[in-house]
Amino acid sequence: MRDPSVSRYTAGRLSPIRRTSDLRRLRDEEFDVLVIGGGVTGAGAAVDAASRGLKVALVEARDFAAGTSSRSSKLIHGGLRYLEQLELHLVHEALTERGLLATRLAPHLVRPVPIMVPLPAANPAKRVWQRGYYGLGVAAYDVFAGVFGGGRGMPLHRHLSRNGARHLFPSLQADKISGAIRYYDGQVDDARLVVNLARTAAAQGAAVVTSARVTGFVREARQVVGVRVKDLEAPGSAEFEVRAKTVVAATGVWSDDMSAMLRDVGLRPGLRVRASKGVHLVVPRSAITGEAGLILRTATSVLFVLPWGGHWIIGTTDTDWQLDRSHPAASARDIRYLLDQVNEVLDRPLTTDDIEGVYAGLRPLLSGEADSTSKLSREHAVVEPMLGLLLVAGGKYTTYRVMAADVIDRAVRRLGGPALESRTDQLPLLGADGYAAAWRDRQDMARRHGVTTGVVEHLLERYGTLTVHLLAMMAADPELAVPLDGAPEYLAAEVAYAALAEGALHLDDVLTRRTRISIETAHRGAETAEHAARVMGAVLGWDETVRRREVEHYQARVTAERESQTMPDDLAADAARVGAPDVRGLTADRRAVLLEADL
Image (cartoon, rainbow, N blue to C red):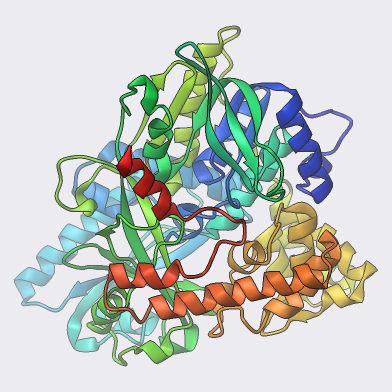
């Protein structure tokens, strides 16, 4: 529990000093719940448990949202295709969570984005049928959100004629459509939401440590009572034990590895997770003329074309992946597939020259009998393969809070004592309190701090009411008020703040997740690395050797990713991508796979 004399902001600062303190807590204390995994589900579970008054720790081998949770389509959505599949409970659940995030929990990070469903050109009878069919689906979506959604947070849908659709999205080929339906979903910076969750858990008293890799479980008889941890920021240090009454593994596509650590006692995994690779392209806003996104049906997946600030996000693919899970690679085949699909409806075809960024992520899907990953369940499961160990897997980003509540409910039952209920539906994340008023008064805030309204709007949409802390840093040090080299949309203060309060330990953490410079610039952050390293190093005390190493590592990562994206298939792309070593010194994921195969 947080000391009531300490503010939420101070208690939630993930500073270098806080990391040292939390490492000491890991060694010295026994926790009610220890969460493994700093993605959206793990961070959400830590918030849930800590807000119930439990003693909580969270450990993450790399950085917050370093895996799946920073590589999504950036949507908080109900899932229109689940309506078509009659999975109404999933739609109900997801739209409820969308409403909570957009109106109460994180309105500074989740906001409406308009999306069009183009209606294909056809004969009059088929046009009537298509409009009725898709219109009924979108209307049902709105009904679910309005009746069950816990506060809509989104405008209602609207039918558009062909001319209306072309007015809203001039880049659509006129002869390919007969009209469209516009609806709204939520858009989010997925990595920033996870960082806010982790900070909110810390503000509730949780010990939160990244670059802390779990190497095995601590057992007494046939019960898990903790884990062994390696601090990857101190490579010469010994592993240490962290004791906990319950261990929760929220490790996504690494879920099966948790069970493998207990293979010596003949443990059955309880669930199996398959990794499905999703690739997205980022192109400049000037490449496509439109004021709304698109959702298109393809032979193998759903394709989104979404506005993202001064850019468009185009994705996604949906293919099985069995190679390096830490750094999934996009191949030239993936890129060509997405370009071919989107070019079927655009009046000016996109080429590889238009691409600013590419990112690939792995969805953790509960394994079944389906041949295609797109047919596997997006529901989640909680299992207890061994006393003291809970695994949670599956699900989707939007419903992270439900997954977190389910697994912590199980943990509470194990612990006994009072029946503590989840209250995260009432707990705004850091930066959400007072956001509506701050946005309303943004011009006054800009005037008081001597900056433009545009700067304040940019910061409010990324930090909410925590913006005042960045403005104070800029006032104290004018060098932090300047734009970053090669990325003028971002300020130097954001790099300093990431290291000072958001747990960023490496240059990659800042350029890839605290900001999205790695995918929003044609140079992929290479031209920003030196400037960002100077700013970050001043906070973390880097000397010239460390700064040079951080920049060299980041440049090598960019080079490896570029090379992988020219490779013809997954195997060649993977081989190119793993050529850049991980800055945290993690052994290659493929080695773990090979070792497991030999056991």
